[in-house]
Amino acid sequence: MINFELDKLKYSTSGNFFLMAGPCAIEGEEIALRIAEKLVTITDKLEIPFIFKGSYRKANRSKGDSFTGIGDEKALKILEKVGQTFGVPTVTDIHESDEAAMAAAYVDVLQIPAFLCRQTDLLIAAAKTGKVVNVKKGQFLSAGSMKFAVEKIHDSGNNRVILTDRGNTFGYQDLIVDYRGLPEMQGFGVPVVMDVTHSLQQPNQSSGVTGGKPQLIETIAKAAIAVGADGLFIETHPDPANAKSDGANMLQIDLLEDLMVKLIRIRHAVL
Image (cartoon, rainbow, N blue to C red; front, side, top):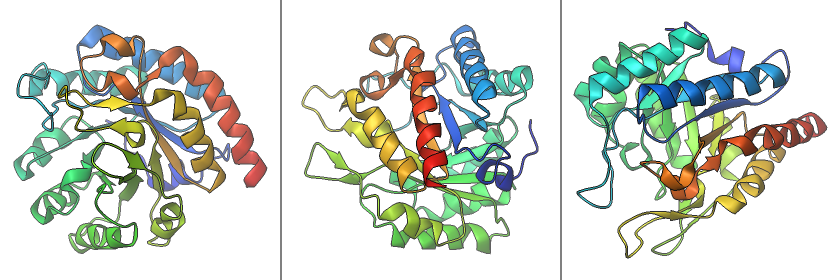
């Protein structure tokens, strides 16, 4: 695993934002390595600090028969192999307190899902591993209320925190991004990320499968960089239509490099 500091992400020598990207779920070793190789090639070329993302298990699904994973240990070992093969940090989400130590043995960043961001025991367990903890802001919370999540982690002896916005609930089946929240959360002294793809979800569809608006990925990302986001979170896949999880709002991986070039221009213009 990689021993990295948050300042290296937030204040990179290139002056670029950092990127957390990868598939929604770990589907298998071959495709995970293929996605990682593509992402590392792009981010190395553009000097974008990079963390590879992949969920070892999807615990929050609309339907009981939805894909949840290929097995915890198998998926975590694939994440570990990605990190070792390409020399990049990795991030995965955890859902229960007893998963923190298990996942921390394989990855560099533990992610707290948005629906669980108020779960004190989960936050403390993640903090006590000593890993960087990325807390996604609940769709049901204001940006200001995330200071309590930060405090829980800090009070547990861990100052390595990232906050990630993923939009706010708007009615029953949509989300909307309030960009005022990004600088407000930066005021807590932590790097702040915009989760571009999940903020475009359309949850609770009648089919039981979450929908999305991937055509607006560029719009959300441009606005986030323009208002000063430290990083972006983007789920991406070679074939989103056939991805096993959240394909409806993922970015087709061949579109990523062009998007990053545009965003770097915006970043440098507003620095």
